[in-house]
Length: 108
Image (cartoon, rainbow, N blue to C red; front, side, top):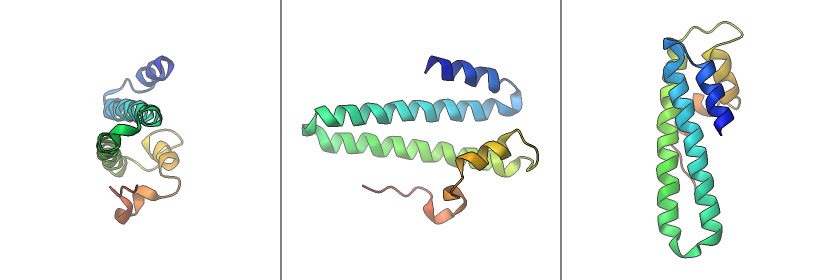
């Protein structure tokens, strides 16, 4: 995680990309939080409702950050091999976030 954070700080130093770096930092933290829920869920079967609430909260925060990242993408230039356009292509490779009906959908 420390390596990822150092890379994040190096790659997102400019004013233009600082918001993107902040979103990525949040998403990485949500991934760690979600992993913690999974590990705890395996060992603690008594608190399922609490666990599901935490997972749902993580998902809602994740979706909010992805929506913000999509807004940044929509405002950005759509050319070039580097930048948010190219990065968004990797994140949205299955066009999940391009279809409004898929956003904020949470399944158990």
